[in-house]
Image (cartoon, rainbow, N blue to C red; front, side):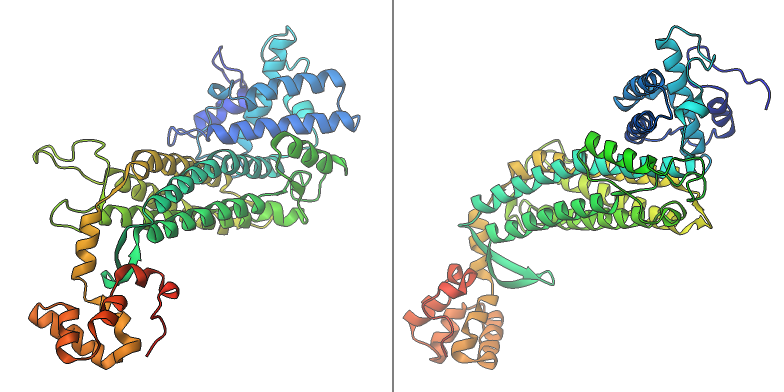
Length: 461
């Protein structure tokens, strides 16, 4: 294609520079996590080719040393190609090949661009195609991000929520369904539900990692494996498993592994579900802390910053608002992955760079959001026990406990009369002669309603 000037300080070459000029779109290169994952893939490929006798030990060593720097994040500045590029990610694969080859030239005392002692295509890309290597790097890098970033962050949030569940176990409060009063619950029970949601989010993270275990490496151009040793893929996945401690396997069908991105769509679904869980938790906590005088006010939220430029002393639920926005963003990115997943044509999906961006960005913000929410909000939550007690005592839904003793219809009349007259449930029941005072006190004791199986009167009438 003729001469192409390349910045003197760059480790990439003409192919990368052409891509930089062709795609001045967003200013966002592919995520650093993806580039590091691609470095690991190049390490594994070099080692596999050496084991197969396709690559000399010296060339293999130089590829691995250069690619290790890439995997360690030391060469990120030499990967400038925009996310919005060739849909196979060929520009980024060529970028990696050129950077590794030129870095090897430096290590060997040769000049950049000399293709000595390594050729970017013949040596660094040996037995590979962008069409199988970029999907492989996608799976490896996202699986690593899920394992090393999102899973620990969710584990931290789950632990903090669980600690609050135990701390709040003795505090009885009114339950709510349809945003209306319901039967009592303990604040600890409520928080145990939140902790369980996050525990399930961790399980979904593990399922997402599982969905990414199959790797496309070995399929080369269209899935047939042309120019690739038949044992190459097996060796690469073994080496990658050792590098990452993730049990990667060769794709059962290489045509599916390159033509479709259904596994990425599945991962996006898990991330969207996790976002839905975290949104529910964040919204509940900000509503329970609403007030301080005109809202529910059962929780006291940590005061992290002034809440208003005009209203002195105002404190807003900013951490909940942050996390809700994170989750909206992730759900939008997840929908983008779904749309990308359907845009495969024949033997190749051509939206892989955008999928890589969306999944890495989702994991990044979810992990940071969950950890910050745990530390800056949940850890500092306090319960307003008096407010919880007040709302329980004023609630008419304690009448539910009377159903087994006076029947649903009579209990309905008691509730209606109490609401209309402002009298308590106890006063109405006694005035009607429906139960004696001692039995009534036992039945209407709020704490017993949170564990009905422990009540001495449970199941009577």
